[in-house]
Image 1 (spheres, rainbow, N blue to C red):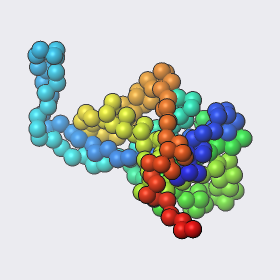
Image 2 (image 1 turned 180 degrees about the vertical axis):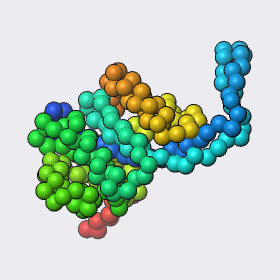
Image 3 (image 1 turned 90 degrees about the vertical axis):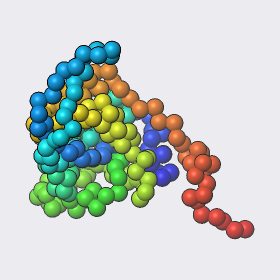
Length: 210
């Protein structure tokens, strides 16, 4: 926990940025009847039938750079270690290729391993990616320390609360949300520090007997 909090204290460095990444699922829901518009005191509202059609589940990878107000997202069919490795490579090559090093804060999931790159790419390519990244993992049961989780919550409230029937529509909605958030350079004002942790989470620290 304190390692993660130390990373968040670093000043902004464009040659060594700090990125947080997370992933979440979205159930695809199709309409069985055409929604109708209803005028009321709050204006025109869309009314949907309570019946719906299940069209499966998609995964959404989200990465955000808290100090720079940028985020990136990709919709995938699954969230295997190969899907994760491909997302990380795309993220680094398309947005951070000029950086000397990139720190990535992420959850301690079994798919988030160095081996995932070697299982997905050639050894030479895997090492190229791994050498570019400093991985910092949140502790087990401490995923709340990952600022990308905040971005996922905002995405869910602002974009994913509606019914979305297919992967293509979901990607368009997510892309529009990312473009808007990036345009306003929405950032995260992280306040929780190591000093706070030692006071508020004192019960989690071992007791040292004199």
